[in-house]
Amino acid sequence: MNKAPIDTELSPQQLQAKLLETEALHQSEKADLQALLAQAEDKYQRLLEQFRLAQHQRFGKSSEVSPEQASLFNEAEEECDKDESADVETITYSRNKPKRKPLPAELPRTVIVHDIPDEDKTCECCGHDLHKIGEDISEKLAFVPAKVEVLQHVRPKYACRHCETHNTITPIKQTPVPPSPIPKGIATPSLLSQIITAKYQYHMPLYRQETQFKQWGIHLSRRTMSDWMMKSSQLLQVLVDKIKSILIRLQVLHADETTLNVLSEDRAKCYMWVYCSGTDSPGNHEQPNIVLYDYRVSRHGHHAVDFLDGFSGYLHYDGYQGYAQTKATLVGCWAHARRKFVEAQRVQVKGKVGSSDWAINHIKKLYRLEIKLKGQPAADKYQLRQEEAGPLLKAFKEWLDKAVMRISPKTKLGEAISYTLNQWPKLMRYIEDGRLSIDNNRAERAVKPFVMGRKNWMFSNTASGAQASAVLYSIIETAKANGLMPFDYINHCLTQLAIDPNEVESLLPWKVNLNV
Image (cartoon, rainbow, N blue to C red; front, side, top):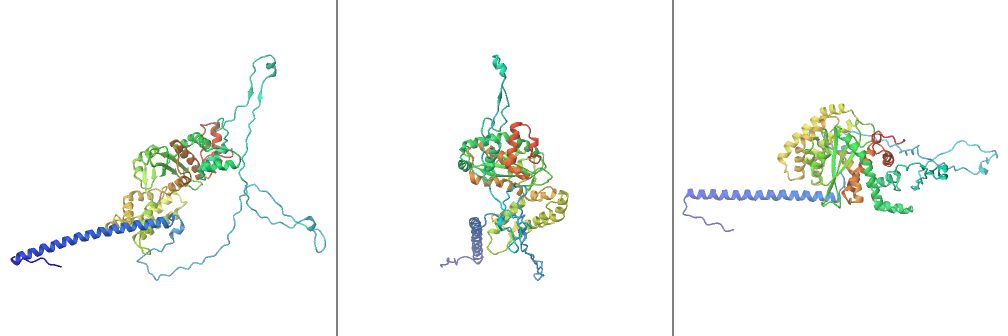
C-alpha cells in the first residue's frame, strides 16, 4: 500500500498536529464503520427473527398451548440460586383401567332380547326345564336420521243453516290462523331453528343444506332459506336488545373484534365486534353469561363507544387503543403479553435459553396462582392476589425496567418488553378486584365460533345479512353459555315471539323454561 509522502519542511509541532489530525480522522472513520456494522448486525438479526417466525408459522404448531392448561407448568425453570444436587422427587403412577361413561338415561330405548330357542330350555343332563337365573345387558348407541314431516293445519268453518235458508247474512265462525314466525310461510319454528343452528352453530353453508334437503325430496333454495333467516333475526332482535340492556348494566365485560368480508361494502375489511360477560362454562355464576355480536363497517373506536354507551365498569381488552375512547376502566390481557414473549422465544437459536424463557416462566407463576383460585369467591381472589401475585408482578416490572435498557426495541424480545411496559398499568389492574380475570380469553373464546364459521361461508353478501348473522350468533352463543341446547332455545323463542313479540323477559337464557 502506498503511503502518503511526508512533508519534511514542517516543524515538529506541525508534524505532531498533523499526526493527531490523522488519528482523529481514522477514529472517526472507525466509529462510522462500527456504526454501519452495528446497523447491519441489527438488520441481520431482525431478518433472521422474521425468517424463524415465518418458518414456525409455516411448519410449526398452528396454535400455542393455553397457559390455563395444567401441562403448561411442566417446565424446568432456571434458578441460579438453587443447588443442582437437590434431591429429585420420585413419583409412582398407578394406571386405572378406563371406564366407559353410561349412555344418558333420558334417551329412548328399544329393547332387543336375544333368547335361546324354546327347545334348548331343557337340561341336557336330566331333561328338566331350565329356569332364568339372570341376564346380561349391554347398550349400543344407534343413530336415527332426521325426520321431515308436514304439519297440516285444518280449520273447520261453521255457519248457521237457518240463516242460510232465510237468505240472511250469517257470520262464519272459524279458529284464527295459528301464529307463525313467518306469516303465510311454510317454515315452522323447528325448521327455522334447524337451518339457523346448522349454519351458525355447525358452520354448514346454505348450499350444503340445500343439497341435504334435496336428499329428503324437498326443494328449499338458498335464497328462500336466507330470507327466512333474515326474518327470524328481525323477530329475535327484540330479545337481543333486551339482553344488551342487561349487559350494559353489568360491572365487568370482555371485548374483542375480528374481520368480516361484506361484498356490498366498498372496503376490504369490515368487523364483527363481540362483547361478553360471565364465563363460557354453564353453571351458577354471579352474573348472567352473555355473548353479543355487533357488526360494524370498520374498527374505529367510536363503534365501541356507541355500543358501550352507558357502561362505566371494567372492560377486558387485548390492547387495542380504540377501546380507550370508552368510559370503561380498561383491564389488560396477560395472555397477549405472554404471546409476545412466545414469539421472541420462537426466533431464538434452537436449544438456547434466553430472556424470553425467563419472562414466560414468570408469567406461568401468575397463571399457576389463577388455577388455584378457580372457583373461589371474589373476596378470596382479591386477598390472595394481593399477597402472592403482587410480589411476582413487582419482580417482573423490575426485570422489564432493566431489560429495556439493554435489548434493542426492534427485536422480537424488545417488542415484547415494550408492549408489556406500555400496557403495565392495565396489566396490573386485574389484582384490584376479585371479579376480574388475568386475561381476555373469555372474549377470544367467544369470537372463535364466528371465526370457524367464517372459514366455511367465507363472506356476507350485504350489511343487513351481516347484521342478521350478528343477531343469530348472539342468540346461539348466549344459549350455549347458559347450558341450553341452541336448537331447543331458538325453537322456543320463535314460537313464543310469534305469539307475543313483546314478551321477552321470560325468554332470557338464564330464566327461560323450555318445558312450557
